[in-house]
Length: 73
Image (tube, rainbow, N blue to C red; front, side, top):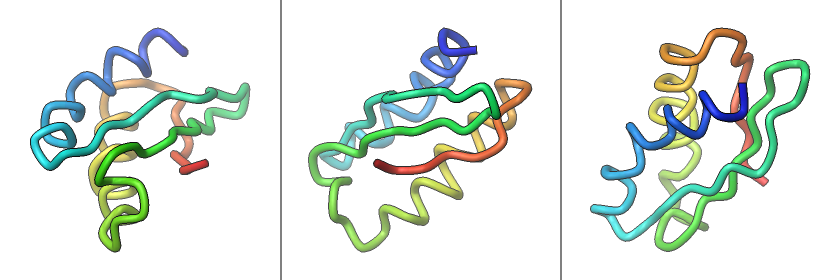
């Protein structure tokens, strides 16, 4: 599942990079929890939780079966 999550993150990465940010995959648990680290201007941005849930989590759930949730670390 880790590799599939990496591939799916590439779908959202251009949008994040265009705004001066990025995302790093930290861990995928056996329970389907994906832990990511927001970087650049995404780190600490007031909209980062919306980006995480409505952007990254949505794309991962649509493209990788078994993803239960996405958390920032």
